Structure formats: C-alpha cells, structure tokens
Image 1 (cartoon, rainbow, N blue to C red):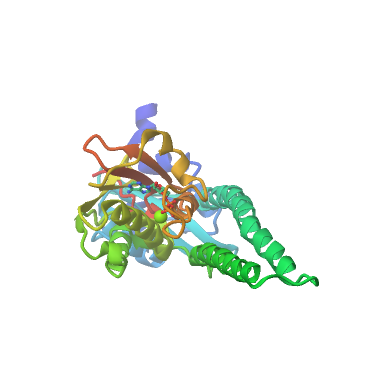
Image 2: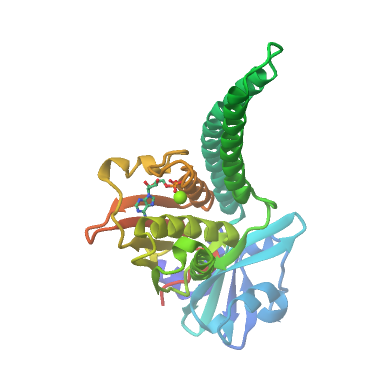
Length: 347
Ligand SMILES: Nc1ncnc2c1ncn2[C@@H]1O[C@H](COP(=O)(O)OP(=O)(O)O)[C@@H](O)[C@H]1O
Ligand SMILES: [Mg+2]
C-alpha cells in the first residue's frame, strides 16, 4: 500500500499540506494538489500548462535550465492581493517526473523581524538609560557653572575663567556623545537589503585609512563571497570601522588587523576580527560592550564604540563576543544569519 502511494507522485503530493505540483520533463504541469487548488489554481482533466506560464515567478527564481529538472530550493518574494509573500520552492525528481512544493514562509519571516525589533527595543532602552545618565553629569556641571557666573553678587575673573573652561570641556564631551550616537541613528527603518559582508569589511577598512591611526596598519582579509546578509550595509560597515579603529588604536599604528569571513553551521555568517596588539585583559572581556566603558584617557575614547557595535549586531539577529586570542592580541567573533536567499540546498 505504502509503495503504491509512493509510486504515484500525484498521490504523494495530494496528501501534502503544502501547495504542490507535478511537472513532466517537457515542463508541462500535469497535476496540482488540493492545497494548490485551494489557492485558486486549476487544471481541467487532462489539461496541462507550461510551468513558465502557470508559475512565472517560481520558474524565473529557479535558476537552473530547465529549472524543473534539477532538485533544489529557492526563496521567492512576490506580491499577492494581501501583500508581499515569502515562499520557499522545493523541487525534486521522482522517476521521470518532477515535483514542486511551495512552503509559505511569510509568517516565519514576520516573526523573525518582530523578534529582531523587540531585541533592538530592549537593548536600545539600556543604551538610552546609560546615555541619559552620562549626559546628565556634564549638563549638571554646566548648569551649576552658569548659575555661579550669573550670580548677582558678582564673581572674580579667575572663577569666571575656570567656569567657562569647565563649560567648554563639558560641552565638548556632550558633542562627542551626540556625534557618535548620530552616526548610529537610522534614517530609514524599513529598507533592509541583501549585502555582502566582505564589501562591508572592505569599505570599513578604506574608511580606517583616512584616520591617522589607520594609515600604517597592515590588513589581511580572508573572503567568502557567499556571505550575504539581510540588513543595512552602512550599519555593518560601522561595526567593522569601530572594531578596526579600536584595533588600530591598540596597535598604535604598528601591526596587523586580520579578518576571516566564513559561512558556518549551514545558515550563519561568521566574521572573526583579530589584531596583533596587546589584547584585552580577561576581566574586561564582558564589560567592554557596556555603554561608556573605556580604558582610554578622556578625549581619546568615550566608550560607545562597542556598545553601538553590539546594538547593530543584535539588530541583524546576530551576536558578538570578545575572546582572548591564544595567539595574543584581541579577537572579536561575530555571527549573523545568512540571508534566506543565500541558503542553498546541499547538492
Ligand atoms: N582591539 C582591542 N585591543 C585592546 N583593547 C580593546 C580593543 N578593542 C576594544 N578594546 C577595549 O574596549 C574598550 C571599549 O571600547 P569602545 O567601546 O570602542 O570605547 P572606546 O574606544 O571609546 O574606549 C576600550 O577602551 C579598550 O579598553
Ligand atoms: Mg572605540
């Protein structure tokens, strides 16, 4: 009985909960299952239609030629009457026929985006609380100084001079904080695109060359062209720029920054950034991602670089960790989900 069912591709796909079709080697669709018919597609008895006319989006997305003969899977984004639909198309061979199954991933995608937004809001709340706390001190100092200078009883020129330089110093600190945060602020929240992680890395390194600290450091990059991520390339570039700038500062311009991009664990992009500097002391490894944690003298660093990296990475559904590098120097390990379209079925 089981064999009889499996022997007929038509009977097999008829019991599937997903829309599916049988395609002959000629490219003619010969059968649609009930789930496909429930979507409004019909074939009259003994009627066939070519897969290109019945499913133009799917056959265009399946890149092999002719697409229905090659087992594989591909993601398709198309517009339906109720909005954008994300589907994953699976093709497989059975005897002299091919089967095509359509899995709707729209809900899953919505959940994924929703989760990323919640995670962003939660960690943004933490960053915001730290920023208000940090901004409060210089603002209170400025406010008190202004009150003293405006005192009706008058102030000595020495106090006035000290007061204005204190105001100038605190204003400079506030400007550093707001500038750093402005570069993080998103202009357009909606447009996520697929981008190459290698391009973001390379662009960030070009940007580092304009910094006096980055002029002389060496750079090695092991690329992976298949490392495609869904998100914001300029933001990813900012992650790497912050990491490279820290490395260049630790290297004091002498040494090498190495980046290894890889596709790992089926659907993840791994980026390892290491340098040949003094490294990060063990007790700091987890603290360095806290907003305003810095070991640099005031003026050189305000401790927002890695906090912002952390935000951006989480916004992309990824993770970032600092490790002690057995070879010496600092090592940052980043993971991002591979863009759905870049996930290919194993041959
Ligand atoms: N490549 C590195 N080598 C050594 N220490 C590092 C490196 N990257 C980051 N750090 C440490 O992490 C701290 C926080 O970095 P960051 O958040 O960028 O703030 P900032 O650079 O303003 O200090 C730095 O002050 C430094 O102590
Ligand atoms: Mg920094």
